[in-house]
Image (cartoon, rainbow, N blue to C red; front, top):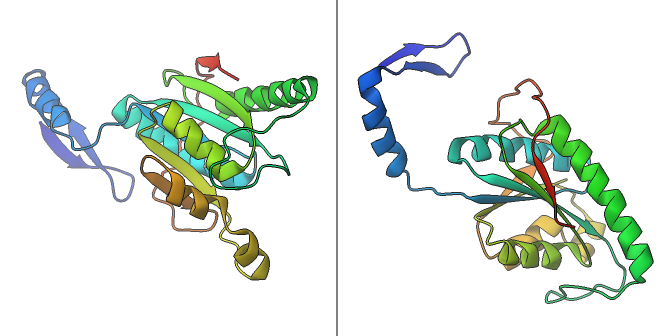
Length: 198
């Protein structure tokens, strides 16, 4: 195995020989992290798209699947333990179908081919619904965005990301809209395989 400087700042190139594959498999097996399912809540804002861009390298590195989740807001969904709210079935089906189609388009633009992707939609209060979905899907990691808003309205309503961190059954990576990025931009890849579970 040879390690050489890369043309990109802060990166290296690792050349692997035929005899190195055994050592690499031992290294991967000893990795302290094991992600199989990464849940990414999406509200279709640029900020939530940024969270998805963070989830993709994790999925690549750990051969994990990405689940895109859109929570349709419902004004009657109040309380931390709320997991579903009754709604007119026809209206809910139409809203879910619309959200599912938007999630499929987003996945095709951002998620490279080869990363398993599924989509989920639900209706209710965002943080509790995301926590419920993470629990039901046995998610290993949630990657969620926050706009980083401050002030009185934020103090009264709180942040979905802040509330989720308190409710989540697994670790959550909170991606701020304006921050120093540690994910490198890569070219958009061909569409991924989608399964539709809404």
